[in-house]
Length: 452
Image 1: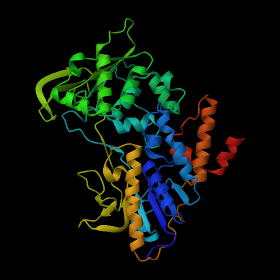
Image 2 (image 1 turned 180 degrees about the vertical axis):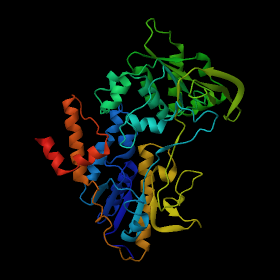
Image 3 (image 1 turned 90 degrees about the vertical axis):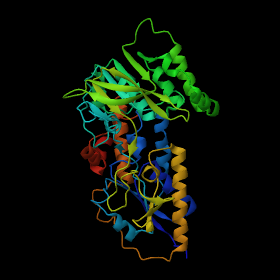
Image 4 (image 1 turned 120 degrees about the vertical axis):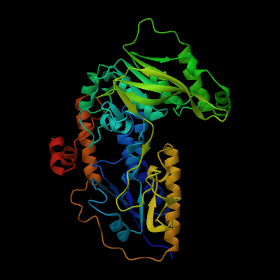
């Protein structure tokens, strides 16, 4: 028996949650959706995880914004699951609940010295420069030389933002306090370390090239570190993107040093893994070990150690999800236990009406295309379960008591306030970062002041 006019709750208003809503409404036009988000603004990783100098990626928000405008979707921002509303309340009130809360924590790097002051997780730094309302307003940008650990695009973002001159960000939505801090940074050298060789790094070719497209920033690559072994030759023969990355790195390594040195330098180091952070009361350096590929392409240590004097270390070695209150969670894998999106209990049985999609389902891998395919898989199972189940009574409307929630009109007022602040500075928008200020702008009274 098919449920007529199904009512669905989606937790998380980032790309995964919004794509799930869009796919569901396309397949079941009679459905209605309540979309819950813990922050005062939607869009999740697109708003709070993408570097501000990537407007083409942020343009995804235009698509997401169009989906949120569908009258069959009710937006409820500033709602915390477990505090303002429980998962069990949602399961009792909706025909299905899809959790899409993403991944917001750094994977821990377990080496000596990792907890010294001056050791930072990339997720925290990204949240700071993207103006996350729960991030600190100040960041200790006091080191002249820093290390970034990681071989993916987040490591590239962190490296680029650290090395970039603040003037190059003034046309973006970067918050004013972030610009002020970046303006005063004494940094001269950023050392980006990748454990893998040139054919195995996870940088996208486009984002890698952006490192060398910055004003007054020089990229330095040691020719010896981009030399290809048998494994690297096999990889570039099979994968075009890896071939482009290797070509870019090789070109950089072959360049003559600039006659007029740039004021900031990015040193890109390959085949080096972190061994320990150095320092007694704060980070003063990092010890690395050279690595090499074995016959199967696995990275193994060579025993050769190198030391670098740095005053800060940024770890960009992966994200993991936070547990959702009232929902199973596998602390070992950092995801929700599931079978193709159906959330499983301790006996590995599907929990009725409960589903997952996005990074909390599959881990922090894949881009927008993967997110859409992942959401489609979960939604198909939800629809199949709706068709097979007998209708069950719904327990009222759990949103009625959410007096502090920000609806779509409240978000539009926040959006208008940011655009207004941006226009005063000659840019598209300036992001609001204070939660109380965002909530004030979500009210009609604050919006009236802006219009006047």
